[in-house]
Length: 266
Image (cartoon, rainbow, N blue to C red; front, side, top):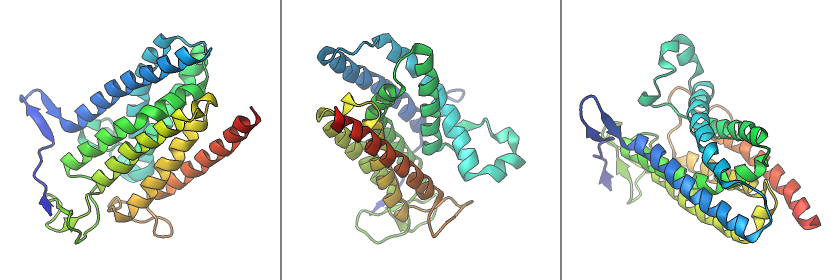
């Protein structure tokens, strides 16, 4: 058992405060950009694909904006709409927390589509690259959630339980670390496996696999995670995260089935 005593703030200069959560976003984007370029370079060397590497550099700006806007709007709509309708001045205060992964994902899809249409490149190819690098950001983000002592798990007596004193003195599942391991590290390895099996040759296949595996991991872990206080359980004792994950699972399944048929025909 471990008692959480980590400080969400890394450096506090008074007028300048550096938080672990902010660093998770920054390093997630930087490392993701580096790894994405590495994947694209490998593909260009081994295929006849015509793609300008600088396009991926330009995409990063779209992604940063899409993640912030999509993540915030997603949280407002999916998790706390009534509060923000009553307190519209709070909408822009993203530094106080309140971001949704599923919202950020929708933002990324829309932003990538708009970018791809502008540049005349395959939307699914770009989304496949993003899917390969996304687990890096997810891993760092969930570690930051743990440091912040937020999104805690349910009470338990397992030996690796964690007490979050700012919540209460009950030992709880470190659900943030479960998500970091499964949605981040393991999903990263799963996608490497499929990428090395040649699944990148069919645009959209890797994206579908990402949605399937992420949704499964998230759906299961939600059973040991405390639901959002303002929502609780919304349908058949399922959380909002589980309901949205199920929808994304179906979308991922559709992509894999349709794209795999193309792969077999080719």
